[in-house]
Amino acid sequence: MTYKYNIFFICALMLSIIACSNDDDDDTPVSVPENDRTEQQVVDNDSLVDYLNTHYYNATEVNAISNPTVADVVITELLEGETLPSGTALLISAVETKTTTYLEVDYDYYILKIKQGGGSNSPYFSDSVRVNYSGNLLNEEIFDSSVVPRVFDLVNPDIIPGWRKVFPEFNVASAFTTSSGIVTFENYGMGVMFLPSGLGFYAAYRSSIPSYSNLIFKFELYQSQVNDHDMDGVPSYFEDIDNDGEVFNDDTDTNLFSNFVDQDDDGDGVLTLNELEPTEYIINTNLGEIEPLLAAKEFEISKTEDSGIITIKTVKIVDSNNDGLDDYLDENITINYN
Ligand SMILES: [Ca+2]
Ligand SMILES: [Ca+2]
Ligand SMILES: [Ca+2]
Ligand SMILES: [Ca+2]
Image 1 (tube, rainbow, N blue to C red):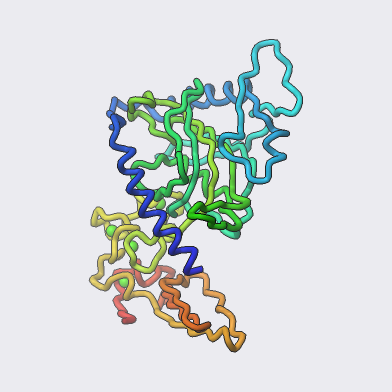
Image 2: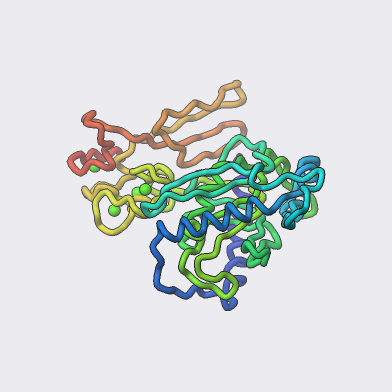
C-alpha cells in the first residue's frame, strides 16, 4: 500500500511539472458577460440530446477489448437516411442520463460507461485522479488530450465541475505493473462524458474552446488519492458540510476560508486536528494480526510498515456534548486532544 502511494506521489509531482509547462501556451481564459444559467442549460441540453440522437459508437468492437483506450472509442455521425451500422450503438440509447444541481441550476449530463473499473475504490469528488483523456467539442474538434497519464486535483480551480461529477461514478484500475519504467494499468474505469457548458468552462473563452461550449471527454481512470487539502485530519470530501459535491461553499466560521482549506473550521482557537480524538494501532502481522476496521468518522492520517509491524495513526471526529454538532465545527467546545 505504501509502495503504491509513493509511486503515485512521484508521478504526480513529475506530471504536474509537465502539465504546468503545457499550460503555458496561449490558452488563458478570457471572461465574457455571463448568460443566465438556466436559459443556457436549456440551449445546451438541446444540442447535447441532438448530438446523442445523431451519433453512434463502435460498441461491439470496444466491448471486445479488455482494456479499451480513449483511441479505441470511435464516435461517428449517423447521416440522414442512413441505417445504424451493425455492431454500433446510437449514443442516446447507450448513455446514462444524470442530473445534478450546480450553482442553483439543475443540469443534465450524460455518461457512456464502457468499463466500470475493477479497483475497489472510486474517487471522491475532491480527490486527485490519474487519467488519460481526450476532450473535444460537438463539432469533433479536439481541444486537449493527454499524451501520458496525468494527475489532476479535482478541486483545482482549473478543473471543470463536470469532472467532479463523473469520475466518482467509476472505479479505478484493479492493478498496475511496471516494466522498464512503463506503468501499465489493468481493468480501469473507462468511458465518455457529455457535458453541458455549465459543467464545463461556461462563459470563459479559450483559444480552442469558445464560450458556452458543450464538452465531450473520453477518458481512462487509473488511480485516485484522497485529498486533505488543509491537512487538518478531516479529508476534503468530508468538509463538504452541505453535501452538495462542492467544497468551495462551506465556511463554518465565515472567515472566507472554505472548510477544506481552513485548519480551524469553527474558528474557536483550537485547530481542527486537535479537536479530533487520536488513536494509534500497532498490528503485528508476524502474529497474524490484521488491520482494524475504522469507525464511521475515523480517518487514517499515517501508516508505516517495518518488518511486518504496521503502525496506523487515525483521528476520529467526536461530538462530546452530543448536540449533533461535531466538536471541530462547534465553537463552544474547545477540548484539545493533543
Ligand atoms: Ca458544499
Ligand atoms: Ca472557514
Ligand atoms: Ca478544515
Ligand atoms: Ca470546537
